[in-house]
Length: 244
Ligand SMILES: [Fe+2]
Image (cartoon, rainbow, N blue to C red; front, side, top):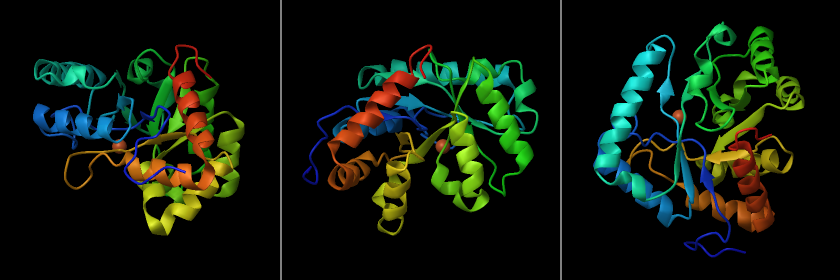
């Protein structure tokens, strides 16, 4: 059992965050990003994946990559590069025809095959599922569906198992575990292999701050530290170049 406020004994990778200053609706300044990174470290997070929003309807690939580089430089100049190990990727919003986007590999999490995919906020169709599966079959991609708990009313159990059986991975936000009303469902999904990776999806230091600690406490208390170790191991494996 882990005491409230204590750090977990194992590493934790925040797989979903908006800590790059000025690129999206996340952190608004290098100072805020540094605050978010420090808060993450205090909560036991040992590495962070930066996943700024990419919307094909609003961004061109070139513009996004260029802006991401400039915003990362601002953070580095302010000293934000020394707080925690980070990996840079994107949270890519699904769009019909995504499989045909030539530059898509450039939106994966650096050094890995992982593409964090934000699914539609409306009922998922067979066509959407088929396109996600086809992308995941491509050896260059490991699809990770972002914040599954925000889409629960948009898919059937059948659809979820179709995706899982094809090796698609699932990320959930820490507050799914941290919130009393959703905790039971979150733990059930984790236990049943329907959640593989954790993220905070933090956007700032006020309304959507880094909040990994409570999720870690709940998981550790209810399912044991072994479960946290499993999540960590999986996170490390999937971030390797040819991982999973
Ligand atoms: Fe996000």
